[in-house]
Image (tube, rainbow, N blue to C red; front, side, top):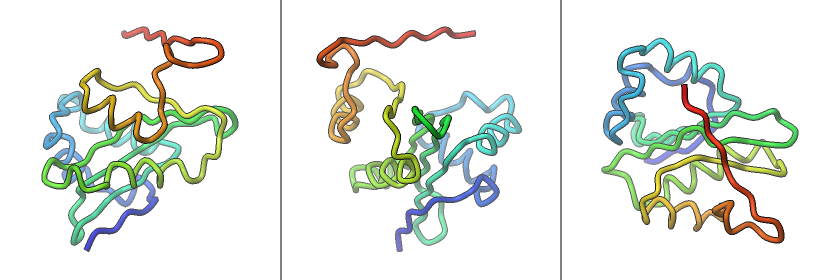
Length: 139
């Protein structure tokens, strides 16, 4: 049975989180697993999807709790994609944050664009009445 709920970082094991991240091709924390768990602890909100107690999806946000909420991570195991889990995770993780701006940074594949546009996210270059942009600085 599939269950989607808000949780704290303490409810997610490091090994199961790495298994999910690896399943979607994420390896940025392989060299520093403790940093991944620290990032989870410092998240403002976390939603998880479990199928028969197996972690199959996760969304996490960081926020100032007043004006902006940033979707930091969204991962759905490939075996469970295209079943509405990603959408449900995004909706669940944003539930406690009825804020003015919800933001994310993602790849540029047509599938990613279509998915986030289906959730009413917009490309800042298409914002009306005043166009916007996103600036990043990587260290």
